[in-house]
Amino acid sequence: MAETWLDFEKPIVELEKRIEELRGFEGVDEEIAKLEHQVEKLKKKVFSKLTRWQIVQLARHPQRPYTLDYISLIFDDFIELHGDRRYGDDAAIVSGIAKLEEYSLVVIGHQKGRNTKEKLKRNFGMPHPEGYRKALRIMKIGEKLGLPVVSFVDTPGAYPGIGAEERGQSEAIARNIMEMCVLEVPILVFITGEGGSGGALAIAVGNKIYMLEYAIYSVISPEGCASILWRDSSKAPQAAEALKLTSKDLLELGVIDEIIKEPLGGAHRNPRETAIKIKEKILKDLPELLKKDKNTLVKEKIEKFRKMGKYKEKT
Image 1 (tube, rainbow, N blue to C red):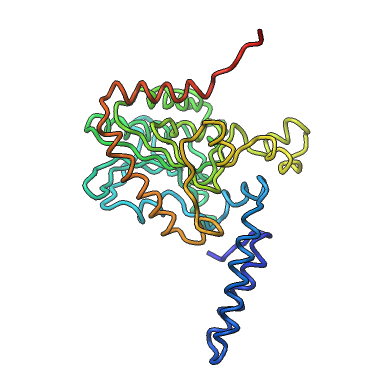
Image 2 (cartoon, helix red, strand yellow):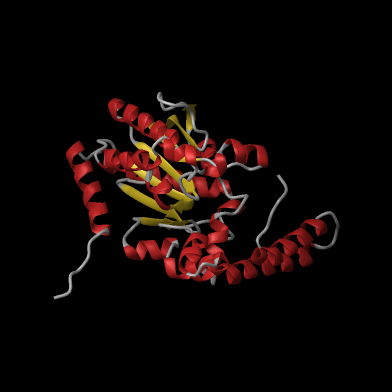
C-alpha cells in the first residue's frame, strides 16, 4: 500500500526522506545527525499541540495498526472463529482464541481494510448485526471455559444499511451491551483507533478500558455532529472540539481507566512498540482481575458504567 501522510506530518516526512537519501553517501554523518535532531525537535513541536481534529485524523490514519496487526504482534497461536450461527460471518469483526504466555484468552476486535478489496470485504470496519452476534457467541464460549476477553475497538460505527436494520442492528448492539455487563470473566478493552458510538460500545463494556493516546471515542463522528447541528459537515473540526473525544478528555470524564502512550508521531510510526505496551498492560492487570470472584467482576463493571451516567439535580 502506498504511504499516505497527513498534512501536519509532511514536513517531518520530507526531512526523514532527506536523511535516507544522504545515508548512501560518505562523509555526511554530521549532516545526518543535524537532520535527525531537527526531525525529533519538529515531531515534539507538532505533536505537543495537536488540535482535536488533528487527533481525529490520526485515529483514522490509513497506516495505523488494526486488530489483526495487534493480534499477530501480541498473541501466540491465534485461532479465528467464524459465524454467528444464525445468518453468516461478518468480516468487519474478527474473533477467536489465543495464547499470551501462560494465559488462554478470547480476542475480538473490529477490522478495517488496507486496500479497496480489503475495505469492501471488511465493510470499512462497520459491523452488521451478525458481527456483533458472532462476537457475543465467542465471548460466551470464553465464559464457559473461564477465558478472559480482550477487545480491540476501531470502527466508525455500526453499519446503517437496510439489511443490517432488517436483521436487528439495534437489538444486537443492545444485547451485547447487556450480556457483557454480566459476563463472568475479566474483560479488557483497548480503544485503538475510532470508537464510534454504539458500534464501538457493543464490544467495549469492560472491567478495564484503555485508550491509545491518539484514538478517539464518541457518541457520533464530528462530521455527523456537524451535519446535525449546523447542516454542514465541513464544520467537523468545530464539532470535534465540542465533542471532547480525545483520550485526555475521556480520562478526565471518567469514561476510560488509562491512556496508553503512543510512539512519538503515532502508533503507525512504530506498531511493534505500541503492541508491546498493550501486551505489558494485559500482563500487568489481568492477574489482579483473575483473583476476583465472578460476582465482584460483574458488580464492579456495572458500577463503572453507572457512574458515567450520574447527574446532579438542581435544588
